[in-house]
Structures are given as C-alpha cells and as structure tokens.
Length: 174
Image 1 (cartoon, one colour):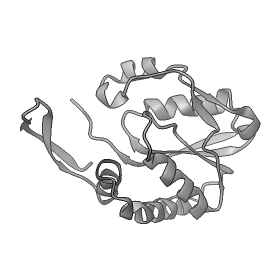
Image 2 (tube, helix red, strand yellow; image 1 turned 180 degrees about the vertical axis):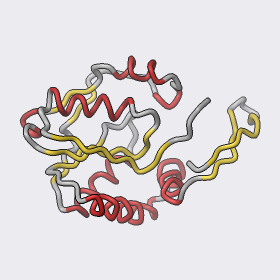
Image 3 (tube, helix red, strand yellow; image 1 turned 90 degrees about the vertical axis):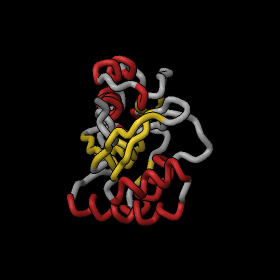
Image 4 (cartoon, one colour; image 1 turned 135 degrees about the vertical axis):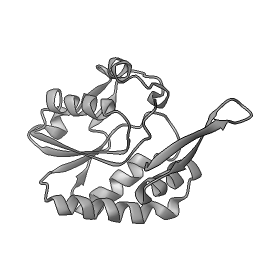
C-alpha cells in the first residue's frame, strides 16, 4: 500500500478509501478480492526473483495457515508455485492452526492480535526439525501472525532457522 485516504462511508456504513497500491499490492488485491487468477504467474515470478536475489538458504517453504476457510486460498496457491519456482520442498501441512481466532483484519490493536494468536499454531517436528524454513504469507499487517507461526516453527517444529516473506503489507489502521 502506497497511500490510503479516507473518503467517507458507503450506504452500509463501511469505511471507503481512495487507495493507491504498489504494483505487487495491486496484483494481490486483484487475486484475493477480484479472483483474478491471471496475476498469479507474475506474482510468483516477482517473489521468486526477490528470494533468489537474497541468496537465502532454506530447505522447505511453508505457508502461513489461511485465516478463513474458502475454496480458493491465494496464500496456498502462491506458496505452492513459489516453492516450485525455487525448486524447494513445499509443506502445506507442516503448521496447523489449533485454536479458533476471529478475523484479524478487524482487530487493529497489536497487543490484542498477539493475545488472540497466542498458542494458535502447532508445527510438525517430524517434517521440520533441523531444517531452515521460508515462512510465506500473502499479506503482512502487524507481524503478529508471522511471529506466532515462526515461534511454533522454532519451538514445537524445532526448525533450525526461519526466514519470512510476505507479498505485500496492509494499510495501517489509525
């Protein structure tokens, strides 16, 4: 998100914004909210090029578990294809959400987000122990989810190292 200016409320009382997104942010918006799957390859290529430029060394790519259940999970699709583009192992079931949490996009207080997420994830040690992991999410808000999943990867999963990557950052709510 480059900028977001509050412009008022719609007929249902929902806040409306004039939003300017980065190029990759616009692609993610189209994928998640417009269901435009034509943007997937460009997003994966961009993410793969970025990761390769960092020369990180990891064994396994793990997506942050989706926060809601839906038939099409952008974070999962992007993670699977990114792992393929990087020629590394993908593990979609290495981390499981073990505690129900509300939709965090509606929780703006960072401490409340941390509290809601505390103990919400468990990592599978048999698949992770001793490995370096790339933890992937499509959208970064406060870092609370990535921090909690990273903690689970290191504690219950016994990961040797955890790198994190998010496609884009959400607008900061004030």
